[in-house]
Length: 256
Image (cartoon, rainbow, N blue to C red; front, top):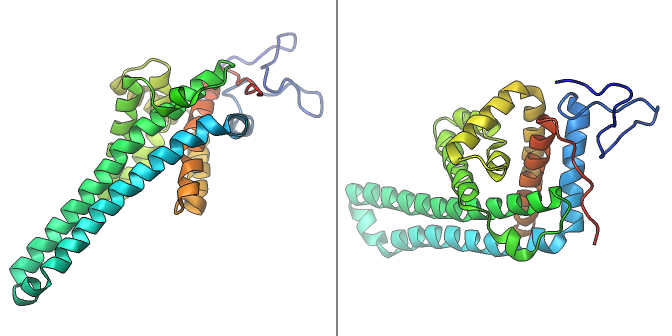
């Protein structure tokens, strides 16, 4: 990517370093790009807490309901037929398989709920990137192509995780930028192809950004509050990194 000559205007997010030397152009330096992406995600959330977190609370409750209903149905089914299970190995195997199926359906429902949530965060991120302040309504759900992309990505990653886990990890890295690409106007298939290309062209930066999300998720993902924070942070970071790796400087999120 062409760097800025000394006389050219520098990106608006950080024109010069402490030493007075020009900051690397977007998409040319891992530290600069990752720092800009993290700063954009963090400040976007801090300056738009209601639109970023209220939809998350709604979706998190829906996801928990779906998971608990599925798991509760499986446990209840096993408890109701405890006597039959004790007398028949075939009945036990069948009921265990049915319980696994119910749990899988619950997880699938959770994924279908998470897709619209991520699309809403992406839509809010687009508003923030363009200098605006998103409303709760805008952050609740994004355009259909973004919803479809988010759900496809989630399904692909989870199927990959079931296949000895490693394919899921690879898919999560290669599809890291699919939602931002869809938010920029790409169809679901085009968004996934674009994401894979950007990820492969910037593999080191993408892996570091992905690891940052994984570390944050592992720390707080097991609480409702943690889920509400991690999901918008992840999508906003993806959006910020996608902009940087495509040579576009990130703006300062608008203040209230």
